[in-house]
Image 1 (spheres, rainbow, N blue to C red):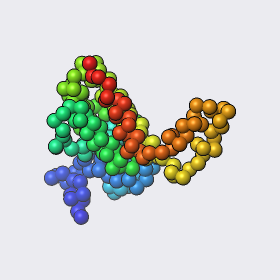
Image 2 (image 1 turned 90 degrees about the vertical axis):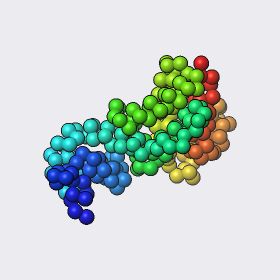
Image 3 (image 1 turned 60 degrees about the vertical axis):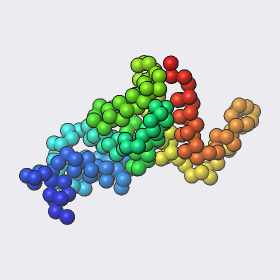
Image 4 (image 1 turned 135 degrees about the vertical axis):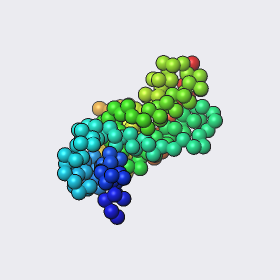
Length: 208
């Protein structure tokens, strides 16, 4: 594969999209902790200043990467019913995060007012408005759904082994009289089940 095929424009110059693509590859290989502008430069075979010319700072790089992750969300075949549409959008958001190593942690740490991020937010707010929410409730519910998806998915991607028994060993019936009886429920169910339960709790409330 030539350099032009790997991410140069018609004039043979490295593109910002190529930098973001390389950064996402580094993320897959090293995780968020191992991501750096130097690592991206090494992946592309260029100087670090070349990467910074395109993205300016690491914080800006992370914003662009986060927006690229949301850019993988598809909007075809969404349900006509607005409540079902909101649920489907949340599900597609979660899947986009899960498709990338540390995807939720990446997006959580950014404030990306970028095209793909804004497009998703617009679609979610529109579904909530069509379901009957006023402007304030639609905005706040969209925030809440986003925070829930990010938090749960971040936990899912960092979850310890399912056989980890630290919680059971830490709980004492005398010191934790409310938690101890519900331990079984805290440990059972997949993240898919927890995601569905959480969305039910967030979206079942009357929108008005």
